[in-house]
Length: 97
View 1 (cartoon, rainbow, N blue to C red):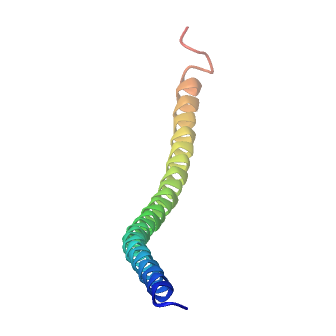
View 2: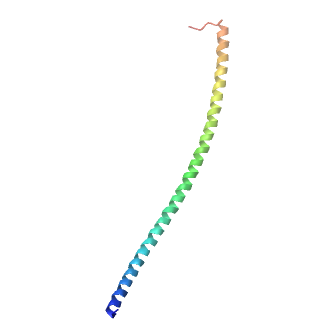
View 3: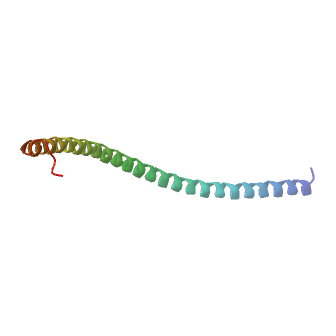
């Protein structure tokens, strides 16, 4: 190889190394951005999980309250029926109309 050929090969290698270095820097920047996105996604996932857990607890509480309300309504109906029976018996089973 002549000195000129060696010089061209060396220039080629230096350009390739510069290109590789530039691409490596870009990859590091992209990696840092990806790490930030992953961190935000982790935070959002934890928040979503906590929210879903809270909604689940609230839904269970609501189901209990609905059951209590249904029971109270049934008792109110029974008591109302007793009052209606007493009133009807006082009229000898006749309605007011």
